[in-house]
Amino acid sequence: TREINKFKDKISKYFVPIVVLISVITFFVWWIFGPEPKLVYGFVNAIAVLIIACPCALAISSPFTLGNILRIFGRNRFYLRGYAVIEKLAKVDTVVFDKTGTVTTGVMQLRNVVSAEGIDRHDALRMIGALELASEHPIARAIAIAAQKESGTLPDVQEFVSLAGMGARGVVEGVSVMVGHERLLQKELILIPGPLRTALADARSQGNTAVVAAWGGSARAVCVVADQPKSTSKEAIATLRAMGLAPVLLTGDNQATAMAIALQVGIDADDYHVRGGVLPDEKVAVIRELQDRGYAVAMVGDGVNDAAALAQADVGIAMGTGTDVAMQASDLTIVSGDLRLVADAIALSRVTLRTIGANVFWAFAYNAIGLPIAAAGLASPMYAAAAMALSSLFVVTNSLRIK
Image 1 (cartoon, rainbow, N blue to C red):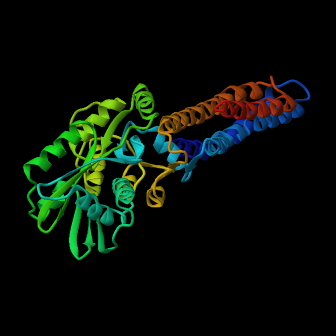
Image 2 (cartoon, rainbow, N blue to C red):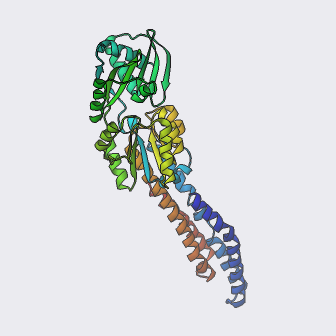
Image 3 (cartoon, one colour):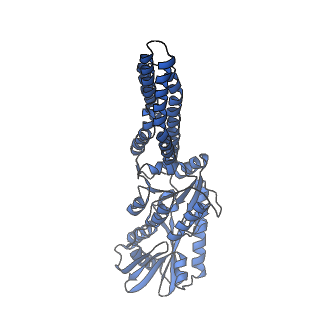
């Protein structure tokens, strides 16, 4: 709409003096060459030119359409941060999705706990659950809930620290415990024994998520949690692809897990369209990389780890079922969390720009046709006023068709 408004402003700068000039010329032509009474004919036709050129339709072509579309967005439970989002959303050609809580339900369940040799599974889950109880991450919640069901009351955690995209650490019963991605352990130079590595690989090959727990300087257990795609995700991805948009999946989970989920929802399972093991700051780098290649990118996410990427994208789209931080960083919030509404929002934005373009075109076309008719004396001021009102009615009706 900014391009259209710039075009309208540029034309309007010349429009008024040109119309006044045509009106003056019309008056003198009819006064000199017209029939008697020449002065009356000149005056009436000059007035008709001014009336029929009144740019009401042009003036309301954008504002009425945008006001109408905002009402439609609101009724469909979208929250938009201003008109500019519509224009940017209509130009999007690549949609980047976070996995957990966006493409998947985010309601994880603990499926298995594999403990290292000499470590009791029950004790391991109790230690891990105590740490994860202090975290808000979906994986942590799943582990904590399972630990509470199995062990009852969990011990308190001190010195809890959330490590963005990596996991968490804290002190449980005087023991320093860390839980998260194996990169967290690698950073601390902690080796993962063969059986636990096998458990990690098996979990990820099945599309599950696995985290490693360590304390006392050694890896002690692997927790496997399951997260299923939302029932609407596959349909949403198929719709976006049919609209010519390229879906990309980003996640902090391992590449194998990301590939498995991508196959389930219909995203091309290759290293370009599926990016696993991505930290929050790396998500921003992926968005920037796509933008540097010339793509207009929408980022869809729901968590704290997505906030920076949502802000970096051309359009940030947050799930209303996610965190407040994600919604604050986004341009558009989908209140229901239904991924199909991403395609609806883009389609509505595209229709809006097409409608505004059509309104502007016909408003100019009306003036281009009406001016010579009025100047030729074929439209009295009364008919010119009626025609001017009809042009505005056309713009209003055309805008209401978006419903």
